[in-house]
Image 1 (tube, rainbow, N blue to C red):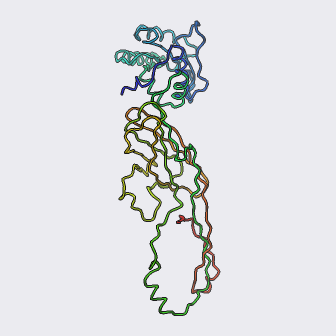
Image 2: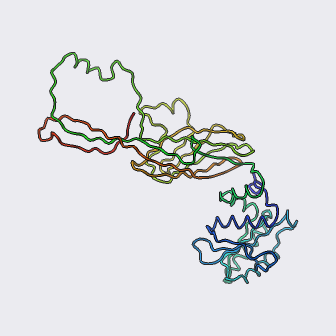
Length: 361
């Protein structure tokens, strides 16, 4: 797939100029970015300008609608002419970007590289070129512009998807349980010897009863729902989740004894050190309006109130998307008072506060 053909070009040069303003405003983190002057006024080679975050000088953009608008190619003479105009822009530019709907041309790109170095050597501004294929890549990398472009220029994107938690929300509230024991020492109570009871004790406490599987209620269960909200099929897709926050561990199950991996293969791949989970679906095609539910997995969190940010990316053979989900963690601390017998008189009444531990149901 050629990504330069994955989004339609704007219908006219005015729409293209608006798109450039929106896109570089997001890239530069510059809400003050603006169009330079109005139609018919001298613009000194600059259609859009702004000061990127962290910079102290203006960057300019010269928007060139080509092919569909003018039926002309981008030429070196046109580049030279616009550069000379931009030298008169006040205040002095630090960088000049040529943004064009023209397709990529290796000769023009080579010319831009050469004239860029020449202009820098002479103490001038940097010069860069972004053809339509380059611009589409930037649109996909900047989600606000992507959504703006899809919604504003009256075409339905062929590819689109929505990732949420299993309950269709972007924010999931969880309350893992933890136990906090307080141990009180008491005098040891002597029991009369009972041969029958002792004989039964040798068989163990589980004699005559079925084994009960324990569940770790301190681990937070996560499961995700992917919906194809576009028109075209999404093929060979995977989801990458990056956890930003205090995630202490990531595991595939919350059972003391688990045969999950033996019974069936999981679609979950865990990178604990990176705090990353990769979900690779065995379902190779997701048609329009189709739903994919991931396998579940579990994370270990702190024992106090906090939130966790999940940055997600969807990658496929023909489409990519990204977004953010949030976890709100409100732990429950289960306090228990336990008694422990002692043979020592000086220990009677002693109180021991044990550290917070996992809670097993």
